Length: 167
Image 1: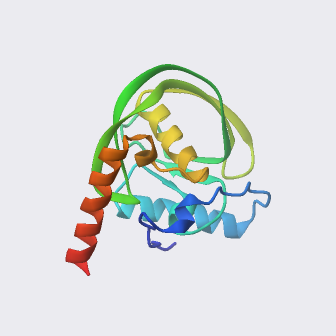
Image 2: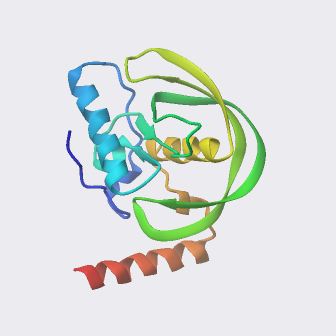
């Protein structure tokens, strides 16, 4: 198990639509373990494979709320949604920036688990938000894409300034 570097915006690999997983082998299990290690180290509550430069439709999540267990979603598909609301959001690939985006508060998910077994679940609140956020990553989108151009530019300027100070 190894902690991987997390890609930051504007890395073009964050904009690639990830490919479906077709092989469930030991290499995939190591990747999933690395993703959890990386997410916990960041620290975050979710991580998509393309955030560490892997072009596969895999995301890991752990809301850390005691009710939900750490979860792996592979080749996820949202099949039903309801109840839009504004939710504050941040991202490991857009560090230090938070803003409100409109998300569905409830959804139905179909996905595969880490062993390739299909499952479905009803999610609401933070779990629904995290699922949508990670699927957006797998589709090459970032939460800042949902913001007004003014808010997005403000965040991008802040990121550039932080990058200059760090470099």
